[in-house]
Length: 150
Ligand code: COA
Image (cartoon, rainbow, N blue to C red):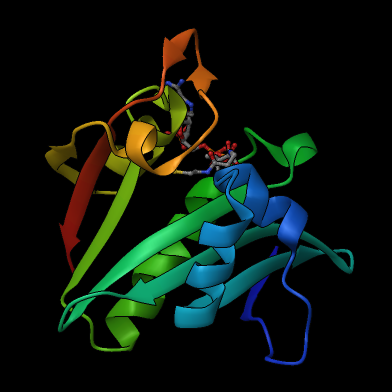
């Protein structure tokens, strides 16, 4: 997989971005404010992530996604590690990421990449999403906040 910055004149891979976040409105706001990176293999976009500056020297990793048929092959970890390296190169000092209380695999992935849990945004998904989200048989209500010093 080759990872590169998406050019301004290219269409973002919306199907992939919506895998990570069901709200098109939120995804579009992230794309507007952040930088979108895509992972390609055989001329096909199979992965994506967006980095979003939030506070001074702080960037948030959002919308990490891998095409479903490529799950479990290490591409997600490669994308997260690439995002960390990119943010470091750009001079950011802290990278944050948030995921649902029901997102067991994502919580494993981020912690395996070095993120630490720093807090919980209680009822985030209840407040910001109209549809109920169920994953791994658990209702997604709270956002687990993770962070890493770069
Ligand atoms: N328990 C323990 N570890 C788990 C796990 C689980 N349930 N699910 C995944 N992992 C681990 C893997 O074992 C792997 O660790 P390893 O390298 O030590 O073996 C690590 O997490 C990452 O696996 P990887 O194959 O790189 O992940 P992936 O390519 O399948 O991509 C996602 C992971 C999350 C990007 C992918 O599932 C996806 O696109 N999901 C939909 C979008 C999404 O939810 N994005 C995140 C929004 S917060």
